[in-house]
Length: 75
Image (tube, rainbow, N blue to C red; front, side, top):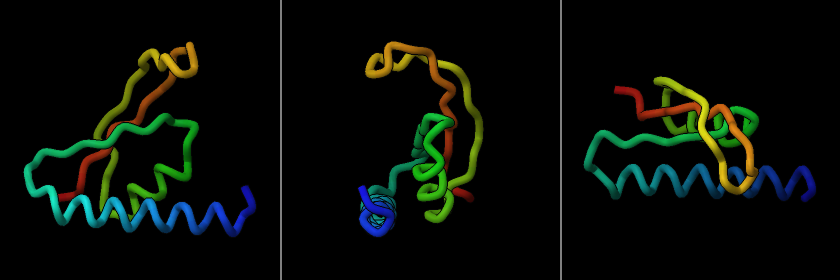
């Protein structure tokens, strides 16, 4: 994927998260991101999420243990 296409995709994801947060008012809501995915971390942070924890878990798709970061919308 080209750099431009990647930026467009991240922008679409960011706007979808913003729309989801407007639509789903029930809280708490959390997001989990694998630590080695900085693009997703940035998208969450740009949408007002803050890191609240993390830990190791098994990722079946990777067949490996990964470190997940846990985020929630800032108060």
